[in-house]
Image 1 (cartoon, helix red, strand yellow):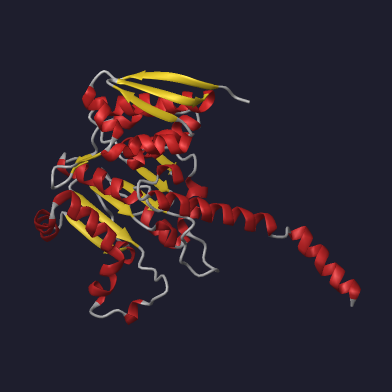
Image 2: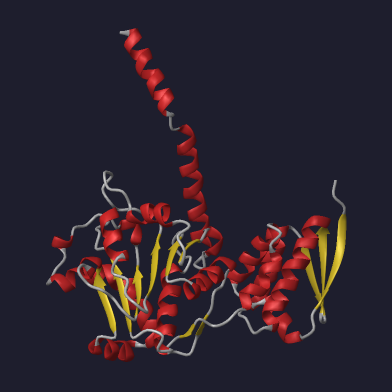
Length: 342
């Protein structure tokens, strides 16, 4: 049986300690619950007691949180959960990457930063490559960070235009049932892109740039026949493109432009007989120079803690179904068996 030990963590500043504890000590309680340890505060000292392995993990988690606090980073529930995951996987040396540069400042002055190592690598890939494909589950910040990078490039005059697009594929409803003209019908599909732009620029600035043609939000069908120079182009919900649509979109790339493609291959709304253009592009373009493929995971989810659990539950269920699914040889064996029985 593993022995119980005590470990001491020293804080350099009381302010850092206050940030690490959080409101009503909620962050400390999360660490205690997740790692089955007890944490007691004595001045600028934290005493950690528990089984040796768990106590050591708690110490490394607290030290990581102290590092983040000393850099002025916000310590919230998501940060605590993520750091516990990093420590449990032995990757806590990557904490320093979570304090990197600001991607963009919102209209309200809030700095947008990558909150996980996966997100940090995603932002590095966007800066470095002409085309970046970001794949991952809901809540990993694929679209929001891509829009932040687009706004940052636009403000720095690296590009002259931001173009945001997504396929208008119905998830249970048909476009014809929606009221209004074509633009009114496709607007609901583009709403997440509008929301991200409003957040970064503010409604008035967004409206001004849109009227000048510097910002364009349009369904994917509007991209056909165009060559897009000096633009930052984002294709969202790319899992719902067909193979032909994806090829059409990729070949719109002009000089001085960047493309970011985002999507979640577990949420495909295409008919069963259609191949997802995103899945096909990942297969075809893997290894092509100046094209990066970033795979975000449930660990990169920055929404409510329950979102991460929902994603994990669905992934486990998909794996179980895959295990239960008969192989082609088993199908063939059953077919011959039924014929012999007849």
